[in-house]
Image 1 (cartoon, one colour):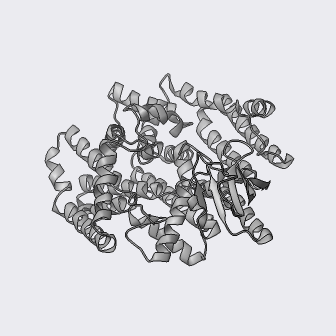
Image 2: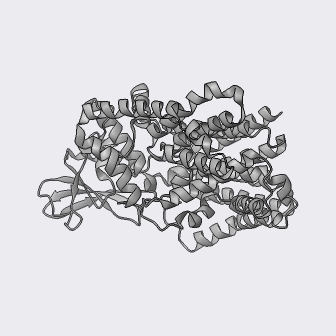
Image 3: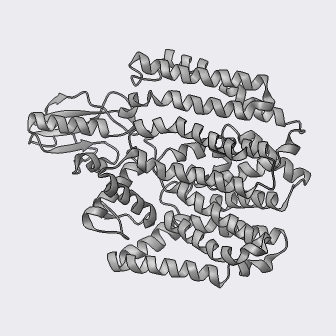
Length: 521
């Protein structure tokens, strides 16, 4: 019955997000950059050192780039569906690992609720929909932590897990970088100190673990140095790791940053999760050794990533499964607490505001011109109505709020996804690049340039060449004396238009539009 319930939940989750994966465009931030880097690596036959338009890109290890390159070779193009699966499949894998790991800690219905909460947590769901390596790293971290736990509690599992543990650690590092090692290292060492067994630290982090890590990293770094030289290797080992940890050159935030962003990263379950962990610690009611480990691992990891100089919401991703399942283990006791019903009723009450809030926003004209067609407006209103109705139903039956909210969220994602094409012109560059190519064929103009366009060089994914970038302080209409197709901002924030500049300042405006989903990132 549990296997059947898990399968049905996975099918519902996939049904909700597959339309998003099929109909959305790549964002011009990291997603389009990864595709451009993969194309350049395939073109120049680089497999360990990566470049973005000739500039060294030592920011990420090779594993995920290899998967992007493999997808490009297999499908002949960058398939949004295939690349999205690199996040969706690991997300489902994380749920399966956590579910199997805690099967002796919770009964079937409670584990079912834990699966629902994890799959519909704001950041977890969001990362499952984007083309990034973070979910794959999260899977390897969870696998490494489970391997440690099996070594710690099951003598029969020790022989195999003592080799799997370092392999998972290396794969986590090889996917994203040092964070894949730091989170397990901090979690395990902190737990062993708290339970007064620090002598096990050199056993877990013994010669087997470090030999696999050192051998894997030595091979990786040696091949990187052979391919790109010592300057690239220094950039990879020091500038992109130590320098970013001590004094970040991007995304520098205060220590309390994650205490602020956890409220939307774990929505709509954040009140229940935080209250459950706080209550367990305050009352000293830790139900099992595994419950203790999940709480210690999640809190110590939060402290560790908070101590780093560079901070992003997505760095919290590996912490979310640990916190959700720690809260779920406490759920039988939490149901008798005074805060249990408010922790579920408050997010339900917020969901009831979805439809009226959308109506007010639309009437105030804050949605802009993205929803120009009546069918798109109807779909968005219908998705908001579903959220409002599920919020009302959850308020009437708070004890069933988790499955009701889960169904409502997945149904709303499914319905709203069919209006996504209306927003694609504001999400990515596919539409504007298609218009540039059409106008180039019609007018015979081959020179393409961009002015004040985010990551304009990465348009080569669609144009098969990078447009020239006009300086921001220049006048794009008079910058070139030869006929030019110029991509410029216009028509609202995050929207771009194409102009045919004939030289001497004369131009013709096109209706093509495009732009970034999140200009700040």
